[in-house]
Length: 249
Length: 276
Image (cartoon, rainbow over all chains, first blue to last red; front, side, top):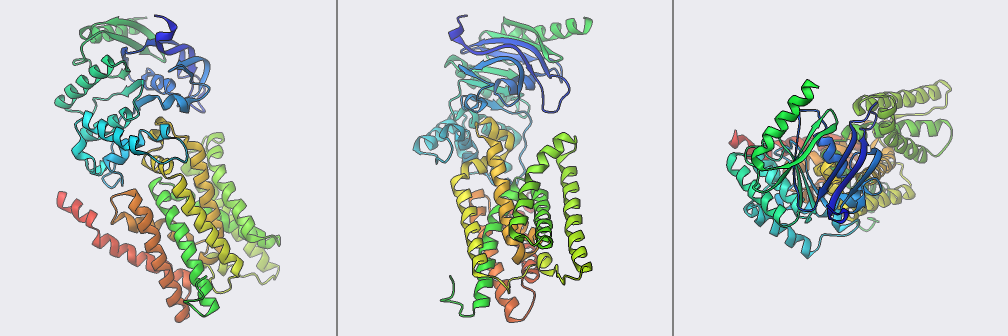
């Protein structure tokens, strides 16, 4: 793959949480092309979430090089985050949280709007479009705290899509969803990948991934042990065998 | 400013001071309660109290000293937690204890020296002996608090919603968060002489707690909290001065009464009961 086609390029990256004695990620090298669908697997504590946080620049890189969307993550993580959507793991909002769905989705565009500027007509239009894309336009004026876990998950997904990201990082996006909502999100992800958006997904549920080629990245103890292409049906097998290989080593 | 309505200068200054202090504190109370940094506000109030006591002891300007102490504490919490490997909660507990000890030490020492210093003003506030300049300063901090919210509204609301999400959507969270702490420290220091170090916390939490009983949206809270606080504070000042009652404590009691009434009448709570 030509370097110009790469949207994520990590070279020998080490990442450490503030105050930690040793790096959480060690010697990570990963290249992801535009429009790729990447599934990240591995046991709990392997560094999957840390990898996503490194790509979107929220964690400090202690060594190595990370280029995302053509920008150096070490230089300006904020600029990278304006072009990368990141759905965080396990969110549940208090019923009294004083924000409506519309306001939450609009927040997804705050970074791109810029400091001291107010949201404009195009921002509100983008919010409406995203709500329709996810089929939650009827929830627009509802307080987010009064929605179900699955609906809240969809709202946060809409928040990330509202800024038209080039890369979408999803950390356990199916954790709160029922089977119908999972199918719906999978169809949406397939459509996003076809439109050229790169999707990296951390998941333990590999049974209903979208059709098309998938790259599997398996992590163990803060490092990548497997990175290869396969069909959606093979993902679980690749993750399992990588896990067994590591435990025998 | 309000002389055309209230002819008595003392009453006029007291009402103006309570109005500006309550609006500034109430706006910030929405941030403090929603970002859940009320223990930071509490510690800052006591740091400002210690700074003012130290300033009086050293014959320095107590207001300037309380601003410096409040801001220093706000900026010490993070590094203290990191360097001493303490949770922010433990750091706040430590700083709160140190601030109280410093304040009480200087007040007690000054009384031992026979300097006739009375700490009552700093503890419970004093609206009677205000200079015009002090009222102007309170008006200025009130404008600063309003401008802060208007200019950085989207950044502040995103941080209130969730700091991690705010960061992930591309907001520079740290500078905005520290600006927030700075404005809170400044407000606390300037309101200290009229509300008092022990009661200031009521102004920094209760208005938002009352507004939350009736508002589904954050934007509404930023309007309801200062409006309610202004009405309660002006009423407290007028009633207190009319019947020679201590103004700040009386107003704090009024806040508590309105909060209890708010909880009982809250339409939001009624919805919750029905759901259960």
